[in-house]
Length: 570
Image 1: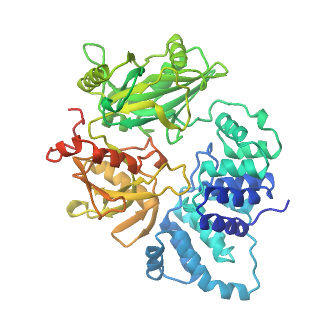
Image 2: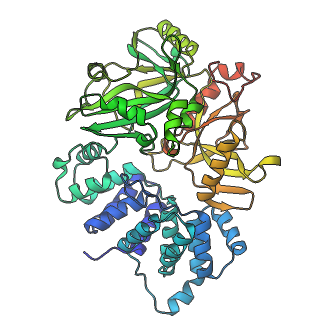
Image 3: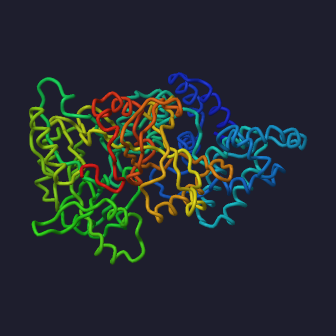
């Protein structure tokens, strides 16, 4: 098969974006995928998912909107002031550049140029871009790619892929179904292979060659985490029930893979953080098994009685730490608390009941395992919830004893009970310059929730509020640099940013409002913390705010004052 052109990929992506029906999106994608050679098949899946590299690849392009603009401006013969209104009009780079290319297209066409840029060439250029951290070295490579674009469609989707912002409504579920249709395979077999392998590009190659049965689970390719559904109070539970009740700790959720002497720790964003926690790696090295542990890394403070969970701020100081690590380990000690075991000595345990997985967890003698009690009535849950609050923990987890481990799913088998007005994990969509001493930093953040599960094709982010208090000057300075790197458009003061930063937001009450797309507004929102351990798709949905709005405690808390630095249980 000949190498696929970016132009053909763009045409397919446009057709997919133009339809809302999930089945039609799947059909269009399937027809395209079936025509590709192996390397282009993998590339098409990556790019359709808005990624420049496969999921196991930790590299990043590091191309901001500013770099892209500097590279493209001379090619199209337009200044920043001429391009800016287009970016504001479209709200993103891709469609704006498509409009610019449509203007210059007749000139390009008169030279007899036809689309020639292939997906393979794009991949090689991405390798080259990722190999340097210097903007001045990235810029000419990006410019060379855009100089190869003969059609508006190519320029549009080149920008979209570089910035990871396709907006075609294609998510992993649609791609899995498209792979099954492309090669006439049973979708359940494709999904099972995806669960085992964790890489849709590999699964697509297996499906193409009719070898899905050969899919094998391998360590060091992280599984999606099983998720819990929030409830506002124990009174929501009806009928007879039995749960394993566990503390909800204030840390970061991690998945640890160990095989022989090799250990890797992955966060929910699938980033590796073991280098930041050498003492935890050493503590797990003593466990004489190969395993995948699901657990929580927490800050730890020694006490006369043995120890307690430390402030989350201490844990944040350890994330990404590479310099002066030994000192940081001494001054901000951390431990890992295990609460589930999903692989043990060659045996994948996800289909086993929770009680069996927990029993094996205890048998393996991990350094610290979460405590649990069985609860069978609302009074017992409320008593344990109050107990966890008094200990300074974040809340209570309720897990059905017979539940399997369902990667990536948020069902009713696991529930979480936090505060009466829970905090919300929100995605930042815009960052603005502050006032006074913060006039030179991006300190005011507009944040959003999902309209529905991000796995659904028509899910979108809707703004629900803006906050500017709760972070330190150092955190704001760090976020400012990050937002500059992912800026899509800006007017000099307000930056529309790629939605990838998650903040945990506390607030006093919820009220109806026409000011935001969500239809709601938060009273006195405060930023509790930056959630670098969460992906944008892990943020909360609008139904969470709707249930909080309806809850009786929403009215009772309207006049309360919340200290943004205070633990919500204090």
